[in-house]
Image 1 (spheres, rainbow, N blue to C red):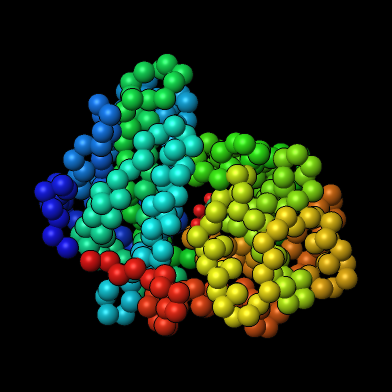
Image 2 (cartoon, rainbow, N blue to C red; image 1 turned 180 degrees about the vertical axis):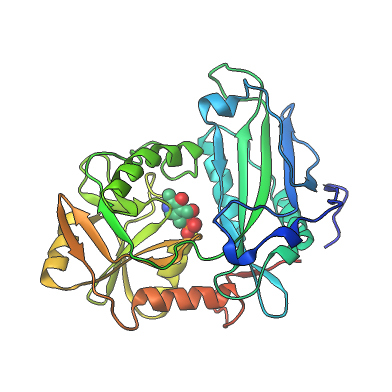
Length: 355
Ligand SMILES: Cc1ncc(COP(=O)(O)O)c(C=O)c1O
């Protein structure tokens, strides 16, 4: 893809690629040679640029550091065996970052800038993406307020960046035990739970670290008003399989409208699986577990794709799930990764060719 005049590209003189050990990647620590940057000033987005990956300088008074006006996205690029790069439903990430920005009082980003910038960046750093299931390039678009001013009001200046990090699978495949949370809340009705606002994640760190001390890897959040309906986990939406029905909470103002979640639902319906998108109570899940008809619990998200949950705890009682053959989780994961890596047919039109 040839960049148009609307995008300035300045390439690195010295690639860092040769120094990277792709077998020892720790999630999100290494970044590719280039990044995309665009500034918002005087009421408009300026000419976007691709520049060598580098530190950025900020005034200590930069607004995001004080008031958290910052949102982000998480997406991935996949490489097939012929070296072609693919994205998975990227329009949904684009729409979601603007939805998040609107909620945080920030300007929307132009679609042409996003797609031209992203595709040019991916083509420049294509050698950083390894083929093969599990390997991918994690893409982190983000926007933050950088006006040098500590007035508690929306910033007049913003920065939109895209940085990319080569990754292997997110979880190492060990046990995933989760705590159903009764005290802390992730999101409240009317709040910013549906946005990928930076502060939503900061607010989860302390409760999650408390849960980790008790031997859990994640928290399943419940609704803040009654703590009796299951919402989502740290960076995953959650599915429950009772007999042959799949249950998941509806995307609402407290739940992130996950792209993997949407894809699991569409895939399951296409398979003829009954999907119920409705509030799921802790009570019914515990009753199903007691009756032996809760067959699966799994999380869905870009980082993990699908992650089976082996056990959960509620009010001090532990429940465990037995691994089953040909689980919905395994089938969904195979179907989605097959599409992502251009291994299988894409009856849904989810795959997006880069370049
Ligand atoms: C809070 C939260 N829920 C769910 C998800 C899963 O969303 P997606 O499938 O779009 O990655 C994420 C990750 O983006 C998340 O941060």
